[in-house]
Length: 356
Ligand code: SAH
Image (cartoon, rainbow, N blue to C red; front, side):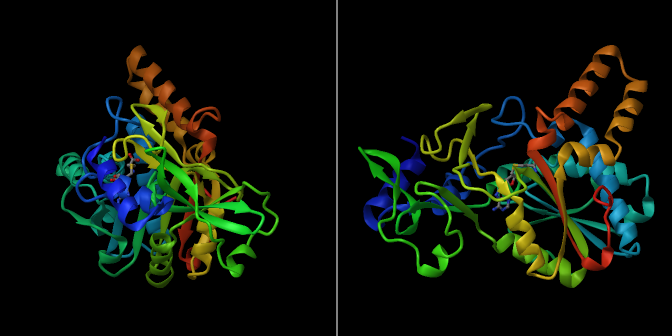
């Protein structure tokens, strides 16, 4: 039994079952035993591989996107470049390297990383050592005032969600308790209040509804609406709302049981992009997209970028570039399941990659 499972059992025995949201939070961010707190989960020897780890093209194209948005903002003398959940810092390093081509932009940028993991902060510090000063933050709120361009790749999927199960008398919270001496999913006996149930009256019995914690994205949207700038959110998920349990655990590149070995697997749910758009708009920001990652990267010129890189490559390197290109853009790989959404200051108008 993992130390975190022991702790979770104690909580359940003394306070009753945990919501799925609290369970996710403990598994990912418990101050001593949380999955992200205790390790660097990325890479082939870790648990999963993300787009910036697949190829430098990803971060470079996003660097070019950020610079184009900065120009559209009127090339302000100071802009915060913020990344939420930067992992190993690879995306930011590739983006900043690409930005050197635009010295005026590079000079305007101050870099802010929002990261809860001490292990990953150390890794980010190494990766970004050559790129000048960087500031770390626990939450979006502590980033200093002023216009900002924000990047979040595979960050939102790790933000906690509540799950609800539909029954004939309405929606019930899905919780984690102890069943046959193991952690198991249960359904809270009392239905949610009437107002809540009015939201989706047509759901069939047994349907599962997921609602993510809106606080981080609402704060982000407010900030962008008030102070200017844009946020680029890239994640796996769906563009139209639906019902279903998407909670998944990944460990050593394989799916695992989300309740087995808490704290030892990555725990995420698919992003409901519709929900993000609602949160953005009700806080005064505009939303662009979502469009698929494949389409977005093609519009930013990934095909041409790959061809340029191949000009000076050995045959082996060229094959790697081709396979990275396919991995990032092909419909049966990351190209379609991953989507890109921008939350922006409405004054900016159409944004690069979204403007057709
Ligand atoms: N963006 C990176 C890493 C994705 S993994 C990449 O594409 O490779 C998720 C990242 O978000 C990790 O850096 C993790 O430590 C961080 N993270 C997860 N939940 C967080 C939270 N609530 N606040 C800040 N960072 C968080």
